[in-house]
Image (cartoon, rainbow, N blue to C red):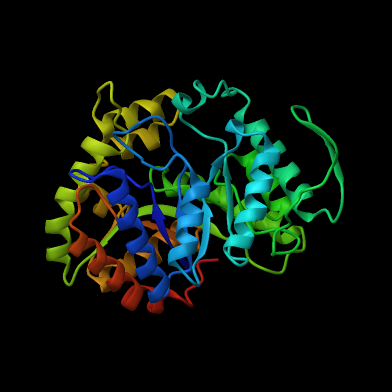
Length: 359
């Protein structure tokens, strides 16, 4: 298995954005020193109540300055907000800045509020993301001028001024649970993943089919399937649960899912899932602030190291994922608790699960 430090760079009470970024670099430096594989961030816009990370390129650049071995990436660029050639150029430069450590994440985007100020197409976001994938792979792997003729973007005889260190291009991720998209990703050799807000038993068959198609394409290496989940570890289950309850409540009532125009986070998340025709996701979101509910269903990895090891084994086997994308900086968590949780995860959970193979 593989392990990521994942960050929404959520707003923190009493912190400026500058202070929050400084804390983020401390987190990543610790993850880098202690055995994590990846450092990932989101791209979110126009909501100061929630995420303070609208620029994943800047995250990658800052992470490059504070890490030496972690593989770093956006998870990911919201493809419809960009001309695809911009994503390709940024990726090429970042791979050089990172010394060949870039993991390139691209997403279609699920929040309409991101799209309006950019005058971007929300309706065709999936098609635009697939087109971005094709262009980025071509641009980064071409040795000279290239041309591209897609339904939305066309280019003639373009030459990138910088090429990535990794050949033919950095590893690419597109998180999706859409069957058609997963089939494309298997064909194209692209990693994928999903969120704990998606019922594992509902989506696991889609990822098994993705694996079948991946193997059918004759690929030797296994793909990475990520699972974004909140993680808090302490010395005992009792200590972990007692502290994490407050952090989870604050996160899902005051931060994740909230907006400046009002609304409680978990309620807004549930409403969004219902609008998308996903009652299973809505049910999880409705109970996201209830740590007892999440732990009973193994939807949050909270407890002692021993407990978290067993939680991850069970969830990965059921949900068909091999990469834990752990969000450690939860709600208004104290930095002392945050750093202890990261250390315990790295020193006890990662070594115990390194050779565990859920598929």
